[in-house]
Every structure is written in C-alpha cells, then in structure tokens.
Length: 228
Image (cartoon, rainbow, N blue to C red; front, side):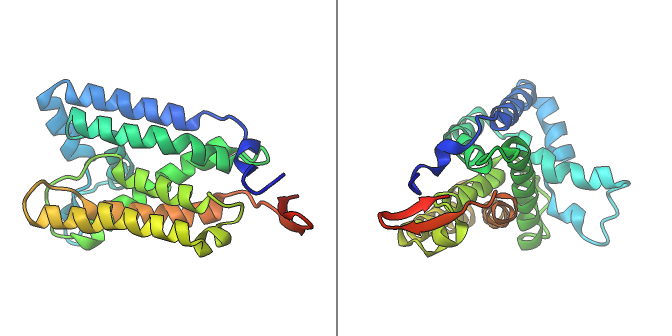
C-alpha cells in the first residue's frame, strides 16, 4: 500500500455528519426568530469581557464552559451558516476518515478534535481581544482547526506533513487569508470577523490532531515508501 492510499483504510464513521446536522438545526432554530437569536448570542456567544478575572459573571463551571463550545453552533446570518457549512462538508469527512485509520474510533476522535478546536478558537478570541463585549459566534474557529488537521493528515505521519513544502505553503496561504486579511478587514470596518478565533482554532486543531491521530507505520522498500 502506498502512502497516498492510507485515507482509504479509514472506517466510514459519521460523527462529522451528525455534528454538521446539529449545527444546521440549531442555527436554523436560532435564525428563524430575531429575539431568540439575540438571546442565544448573548447566552452562548463568546464575550471576552466576561472571562476577565474581576467580571464575576459565571455562577458555575457549566456557565463558564457553555459559550466556549456553544458558540460554534450559532451563526450571524444565513450566509454565514452556508459558507461555514460548505467548507465544513468539504473537509470534515476526510479528517474523520484519517482519524479512523485502523478502525481507531475515528468518530470519537473527530468529535474531540471539533470540541478542542472550538474551545481553542474561543480562547484565542478571549486572549487576543480581552476587552470585547460583543459576542462571537460561528463554527469558523472549529473549522480552522479541522483544516489544520486536514493539512497534518495529508501524509501518513504529521512530521512528514510539517516538512512538506506544499503543505507549508497551503498553511501560510490559509493563515494569510483567514487571519491577516480578516484582521485587516475588521480593523478597516468593512465587516467584523473574529480572526482571533480563526488563529486559536487552527493552532488548537493542529495540536489536537497530533495527540489524537492513530499512528501509521511507514516503511522504506525497493519501490519507495509503503504502509505496513
């Protein structure tokens, strides 16, 4: 088996589909009523000012954690939802297939990757923009983490992916568009984008993939590298 065939070995799990359907269902319920949308945005959106030491907003660990994950299931508009789900659908099944290599519980691994990426996106926003009182919502931070996992999983070993110049270039282009350009557009007042969440989600997703991905053995043979 060549190193370009390893994705085909993954079990066809469906956690990515159920998570995607949950995001769509919650977002439709949210967006179908303006008053409900506002209430949910301020209840489950990430508001960095609330996470400051002297804020005293959260009464329980659940109150503290709910926005860190819940924000990924809410969206600001139908277009916001469509764009995020379009990218999610293109990437998530491939990442879950990679996490399923060898039948290694890829569904649970993907769910963990999604949650860690969402939390990483929220923490990135909280740490970089601590005084912000406007809630950040959307699955883009978690999706950025999925993209990081996609890049690292493009080779049998993540160490090989880090050394691959094409993957390095793809990562730089992704960050240039989703972090640098989005930061510029936000500062210019064109439209608000939580680029900090993109960066946090990307980094968290990369770390999560390294920890969660099943190990794949690669050997050297007379006709090149192969899976063993």
